[in-house]
Length: 267
Image (cartoon, rainbow, N blue to C red; front, side, top):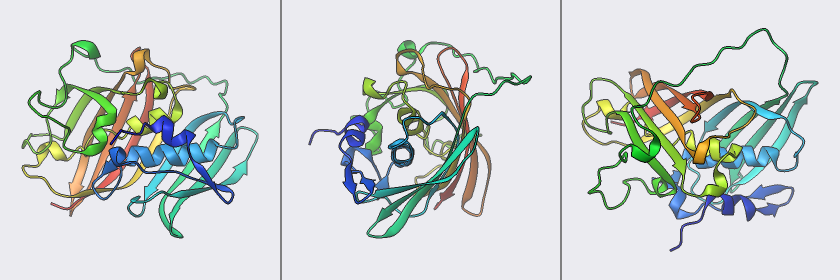
């Protein structure tokens, strides 16, 4: 079966009444649901679908409430449109039940005395010279959605290796150049790494993301040849729940996104 790109999914959305309905191809699956970054990309696309005049996305709060196992219909509602900020809520429904929600705040750039950036940590090599995240002997990625991305390991440990810290830093990009430099592409790839707790664990176990908070720190998602440097770091874990920070830089070292996520670990 031919893999379906995210660009194709967005372009072929069908109207279900006043809301778009998106397909969920097998190559975007993650267990019994869709990959979280894919779901986030659909939510923000629905928010922007009829509003080409929106300014840049500044902040997003995404909640994963149920498996996205079938094509969702995504409803969008403008909560408030102020002078600077427009806030839009989206709701993905399957058979009338909510599977995911998103709240997106779009805002114009402001003149400010504040100009502080988090410069990317130095990488020993560029993406072309960095080894693959997956061992060369691995015939296919262990999780289906990874076929849509190129991922290179800069620093950190693989899942279930019993590492002494939950940290991974990578280079990553979409295999489909059509998603390079797009907002939906950035949201999708921003969730590409496995949970930050996984390197510290010694055996696999089910997991489920509960939410994802993302602050966007640039007016655009541009980066050279589609590559982003990304990291995730475990901040705490207890009782089957973990909290992690997630950061994204472009190839010039400018921070593009800063995020936080809560993940349930069933192991």
